[in-house]
Length: 300
Image (tube, rainbow, N blue to C red; front, side):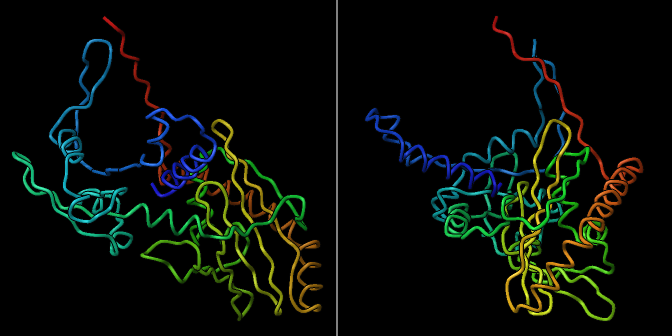
């Protein structure tokens, strides 16, 4: 939801800057905004002529939720409203802990408890961020590997500590500094090197596209960007290792280690991570969503 809203606001700003038309629709571009509703419930599929519709009490509820008093009560003009049923089903109580509680009452449906997130606050946070990443032209090392899953699922695997440990070849692996239960900017991975643990801090976070980690070693700091590019049912992972900065001895050791050992280690980690993902798909631990084909509605 956050990624979608940020992309929407970026597109909106470009339209405002590039539009010279004075018609009413174009003048109203700055006032456009988005609202999201997330609910969990049961439904049935009903064939209505040439198309298929979802029907049921929970389907009625999600439509009724669009008529609410959220703006009047909270002042949020753009928001995501998670029903308590969705929060419980998705297990995102930690993420919703800082959101605004809100309740709506509907005839025949009763009270509906919701957690409301202010999306304009998300935009204000994101638009002021200075992006930090390794550009392909400046990379000390670039490794590519294809995975037969979508970018959102691969993103989950790359950011979870247990999968990341497989990729970089260190075990155990843990993460601290979660924000509202979520891994994101400021979170720190710790990878074991013998008796010591090296901190790896997330410094840039662009979900489903790329994220960047700053790795500290002997006083030197190096950025590593993991970039995802989707093509059909395949996602290409590109790992870009930047040049180190800091004390000269630390830079020499870090860059030399990257050139000598990282290529083989990262390629091995990619193969083992793909094998693990394939195994978990086969065992049903990871479920791939099959596309749903719905016939288009035909005019009478």
